[in-house]
Image 1 (cartoon, rainbow, N blue to C red):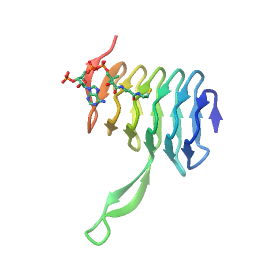
Image 2: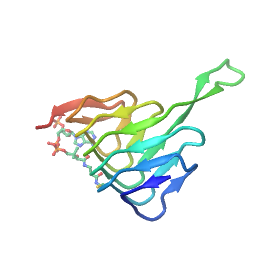
Image 3: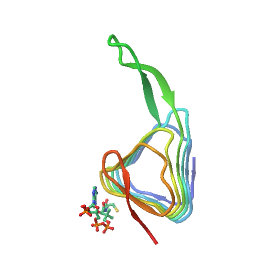
Length: 129
Ligand SMILES: CC(C)(COP(=O)(O)OP(=O)(O)OC[C@H]1O[C@@H](n2cnc3c(N)ncnc32)[C@H](O)[C@@H]1OP(=O)(O)O)[C@@H](O)C(=O)NCCC(=O)NCCS
């Protein structure tokens, strides 16, 4: 675990494969579900309350067991990003520098820099200067 920013109380880390850059704060109750894969958060980011970094998923199996083979993929957050409360970041996603993720968004794909992304699934709704 390499933490140069601030982590507030009640955050849960399932492993130590976490990097948090300088000037970044992680607000209360965030969840990092990353047994084997890494989550890396850049510099000067603001992470709202109860954001879920979800690094695990499953292949969709047969009707007998839909949650089939486990898949893990890292999450990367660039510099200067602000993630609103209760957003969900799915496995393998990279959030580019300067993005804002609105409260409650579910980010299923990589984002391009300097955009406001909102909704389920998250879509780019605004270009930011
Ligand atoms: C996204 C946010 C930053 C607002 O940004 P903004 O540029 O001022 O956006 P606006 O309020 O002008 O809204 C732009 C559009 O996005 C929509 N929108 C705003 N927040 C949204 C959200 N969380 N989810 C979905 N859509 C949202 C608005 O309804 C509006 O849609 P419209 O153009 O169809 O009317 C704010 O709504 C937000 O989610 N803030 C996070 C707050 C938070 O989590 N705080 C605690 C942690 S620090």
